[in-house]
Amino acid sequence: MFSSSLSRRLHGIFNHSRSPTSRFNKSNPSLPSSATQKCNKSTAATPLTAEEHLQNIVDKFIKNTESQRFRHQKGTYDSTVRLLAVRKKFSLIEDIIEAQKKYEDIKVEGFATRLIKLYGKAGMEVPQEVSIKADVISYNIVINAFCEMDALDKAILFFHDMEKNGMEPNLVTFNTLLTALYRKGQFFDGERVWATMENKNIAPDLVSYNARLRGMVLEKRIQDGIELLAKMEEKEIKPDVYSYNILIKGFCQDGDLEEAKKWYYKLKESEVDPIATTYRILLPLLCEQGDFDSGLQLCKEAIDKGFVFHTAEVQRVVDGLAEVSKTEEAKDLVELYNSKNNLKFKLKLPQNST
Image (cartoon, rainbow, N blue to C red):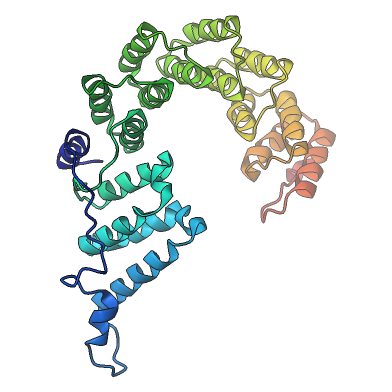
């Protein structure tokens, strides 16, 4: 999570105007490059020290960032910064981050968010030289970064700062906060943000409604969620597969199989295609309550669509069918599943069914 010092320094980004002055500047004679430093060393083939090894990693990393494709590799950035942070090589981390600022990607919200998060992951303060133009987009970048780090109190702080600095939050701002707050179970905070959005006459979209729907289901207010779904349709916002999945999951968690199945059928009637998650949400409850016929139908449908279940999930259906003497159905499912996947583990009929 972001430290309080990082939060203060991010405030400084927006509240002070300073010309960017990169410390990653190889033309500065007072800061010799790693290449120059190496030339001053003995040319004898000696093993690299741990510090030289890390410097080599950073030099290669910075060289590789000239490739736009490489700059899209989020995991590589995270793992490299994590390695350097563990070894407390913060100056090398700063070299990496400084090297990114010359690229146009910095204007892209996702890339800029990643840079801010890299400072946070390294436990470093964001320097005031990391100047981001104070506009709605830049606030959205920082709010999103805080939300992704689960620092929701700081995200809300920046949300309130927007108006103080003469900027109005837009739908992206609200959706970012609503998604994070409702997902984390902060329902009443989410409701306050929703009310603010309505007071500003910003119309919610599908993302907004799905976020609120998730919050209602997590809060065990599933009937309110159903009413919200109806309101969406009144406003000609068509629920998507995620809308239905939220309700199906809510009923499954409550053990209400009939309602879960009803909303699964409504999903199909609305010409929305189920996704792998839809089947994985519903199948365990079908098995738990002994509805193996529906489980069989669900498995066949999912397998025909190319979705892969864990073998144990489908084996439970096979075993259940065999227990109620539906051996042929169980056998058909075993053959279908085993023919459609290349997994190491295959389905088997129970011994007393063969």
